[in-house]
Length: 244
Image (tube, rainbow, N blue to C red):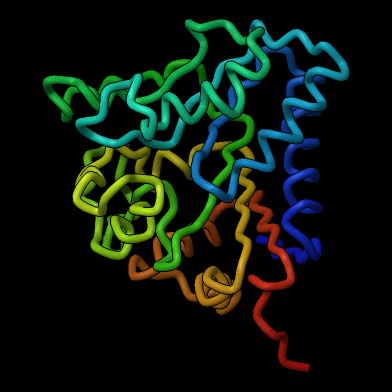
């Protein structure tokens, strides 16, 4: 694992957008694992700009989102399905609809939907790149502290801290869904390459845990130390002080 301070959110976001763009440029049938949330907004802004400038053919690209809230309709303004339409698929409307995959949070049988999504991930082989954010408690996807490292796509009960963190997107904290479907930690680890982004002082402690190199389910992101190709990009605010 390499933890690299690129100084600013803009620098790191543009770098990751460039890596995603290059992956699609050189491999037309790329399989990409995509994340949502505030951390990713600038990444997609820059990616759309690069795609537009080059009019890249993305018709064969296949995308898989990390997670989706349980109980939200796909057209709900705070669903991750709508988030992706807003930041990427609507802004660059050249992706093939059948190649865009987001867990169905409205499914009648959430366990069956989780298994269907995991099978979909497995079907075409490992994702070429998986991008991740990180929660203040070290969660990746919606895999909260204590999630088994061998977990596959599953239904997650969100912790109070995660619900509180996501409440800024809803009218009331009571409106925040209490569950989500999320790729499991084992699902994430199958990707060929993983890129994690962390910005702001509130993410510094989570990055400090990563830098300690201790692998523990108490900080789910630490499983990434077991992956051969992980890059973590931070800004100045998220970078812990390094002892000299």
